[in-house]
Length: 272
Ligand code: HPA
Image (cartoon, rainbow, N blue to C red):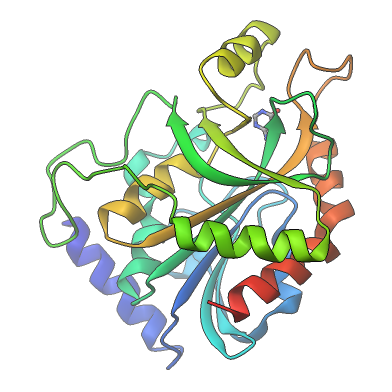
């Protein structure tokens, strides 16, 4: 079945559950799914129930599409994402992003856990994305272009929306949240980087590295959405400390900052 037909079926399925017309979409990264407790939830739909959604298989990534409100703002939350390293095609990885765009959202907030590449960073810091480098070796737009969704050759000059970035930075600064603004390197994973790879990422201008976000940003820009990205720096990248990196530690950092994360995200979204 053509992608556009699949999207129609998914949208119809979701609309049969809820009359909410979300304005803002939020994708929650590893260890950050507790944000949902700050949402006035109307409907929760498990990914596996939605036609054409791939189930999320990663621990720390429950797969639910949630409709509700943050403050007065109608939102759709993707609690848990589909990763390229799970073996899905890029088309499947960005499918939920395409669905939330087709639901009528204009703004997308992508959150993730990432390794810090700057030695000044500490676990639990945040980094607002001002740009990214796609190192996945793939691109979700490879294949025939669907003109109804977007251009064949989308411009990426402002992949991350400046106005949203400045708003989010303002919220973080006012709240005294430790943060920086930087470039996210998107890799395929599932291995964490080697020390040599980390030095390479530093040299090419990266400030954080992670296994998500970049494909979704590309698909969202393709569809004309305004995108904002924020990384929770869950660890310093390989070789910058003598500690090994584990998924357990990544989740533990998410847990450590979950209250702070929910609070500033609620304030940010309420002002969008
Ligand atoms: N590298 C890649 N992805 C990650 C990391 C990391 O160090 N930490 C959390 N996600």
